[in-house]
Length: 238
Length: 352
Image 1 (tube, each protein chain N blue to C red):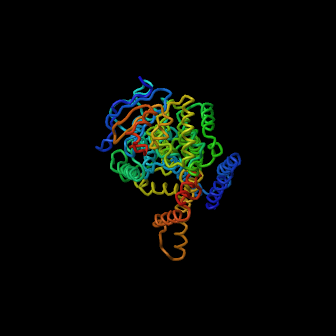
Image 2 (image 1 turned 90 degrees about the horizontal axis):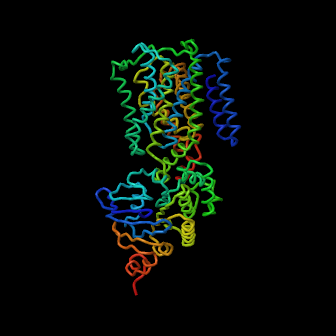
Image 3 (image 1 turned 135 degrees about the vertical axis):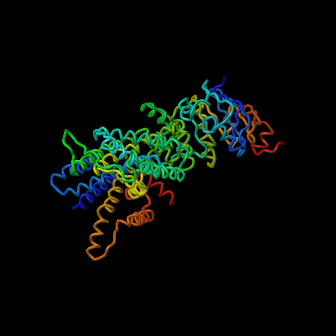
C-alpha cells in the first residue's frame, strides 16, 4: 500500500463530471507532479483528497480511509494543503496566519518549533511577521500560504499551483524551497500548470486531461514524452 | 446628571481603547467599574439607575451578539429571540403562572443554558448558509419565537404575557421595587461577560472564528472543524442574551411577546455597526450611545417639545433616527466609531 493511494476517484459538480475514475499514488519521500491544463480536474483532485469535495472511489492515506474522515481530521492525520489562489487571511498578520496553520497543534513549544522551521525555509517572512498578510507581494503571500500549510507538520504536503502569477525569479525560489522541504523528508503532491518546472523537480508525474488520467511516468520520462511535450510544454516535436 | 454617567463611561472606553499599554487599559476599566459600583452611594436618584441598568442589559446583548456577528461573521438578525427565551424562562419558572418559584440565581444559569441550546437549534440548519441567506433565516427565527410565545396562550399568557414575576432576593432580602440591586446584578453580569468575551476572543476558538469570518474555505484547510466552531458561536452568543433576558424580565416583573419584536434585533445589530463590529470596547460604546438616544434624549426631546407647545412623540421617530445614524456611519466611518484593527483594514483595503 502506498503512502497516498487514490483509486477510481470520480467527482461531479451538479451533474457535470469533473473527474472520471482517476487513480494515482504517492510514495513516502516523493515529489509527485499532477499536471494538466485549466479545468482538467487538478484542483478538484486535491479538494477531494482533503475531504472538501464529495466523491466516489477511495482515498487512503497512510492506511487511513479518508472517506470516513472530516476535513479537520484529515489535517490532523498529517495532510497539509496549500489551496489554489493562496487564500491567506489578508486582514490578519503573517504571525496570525501561521498560528492558524498550526490550529491542530496543541503544544506551544511545538508551534514555536514549527515557526522557526517555516522562517528558516522562508526567511522573507520573518521581517514581515507583524505585517498584515494583505500587504505582502504575491510571492510573499505564496510563501506564507506554503508556510501556513507547513505549520501543521504535514507528512504529505499538497500544493495547488504555487507558481501561479509569480515572477520567474520568485518561482525559482518557491521551487527550490519545495525541493529542500522534500529533501528534509516532506512528501509532496504538486499541482502545476508550469509543467516544465514541476517535472524537473518531480520524481513522478501524472497528466490529467478533462477529468481523465492521460499519462503517468517518471518526471524525466514525461519531460521526454513528445505527446506531453506538445500538449503541455509548449514544444513541437521535431 | 444621567448624561454624565453615559459620557464618562463612553469617554473611558474610548480612551482605554487608545491606550497602548495593556495594564493602563485594565486599570482604567477597573477604575470605571469601581466608580460605577460606588455611584449609588452618592446618587440617590432611582430613575438614573433604572436607565443605567437598561443600558447594561443592552451592553450584555451587544457583547453576546458581537460573538456571533463580530467574531464569527455570522449575520444574525433574530438575536432578540434568545433574549425572549431568557426572559420567558424566568417568567415561566418564577411566577404564579405555573406556581413555580425557582430562585433568580439558578434561573440565570438555566436561561443561559436554554438560550445556548436554542442557539444550537437555530445554528444547526443554517450551517451551510452565509451572508444574506443566513440573515434571512435568522430573521425568520426571530419572528417565530415571539409568535410562539404569543400563540401558546395556555403556557405563556398569549399577547398579555406573564406578569407578577417574583422579585429576586439575595441572602433572604428581596430586591422589591428598588432598581439599585438590578443595577448591581447587571454590572456583575457585564464583568462576567467581558471576562468571557475577552478570553474567548484570544482563545483557540476565537482565532478559529476570525478565520471562518475571513475565509471559511481557508479555515477548513487549516483543520478547523467549521461546524463545531460555528455552533459554539451561536450557543455562546445566545447564552449572553439568556442572562440579559432573565434580568430584564425580573426587573420589569413582566414579559410579553411585543417586547421582543424584530426592532429589538435591529437595535442590537445597529449597536454593533455603530460601535465597531468585532471590537469589544466598540460594541459597548455602540450600545451606550443608542440607549442614551433611545431612553434619555428622545423622552427629553418630547418634554422640551411639549414645553414649546408642540406635541410630537420623538419615540415614534426612533427608527428614523437610527437610520440616519447608520447612514451617517456608513458614509463617514464605515468601520464604526471604535473599530477593531482587522475591520479597519478590511474597509480601507476595500476602498483602496
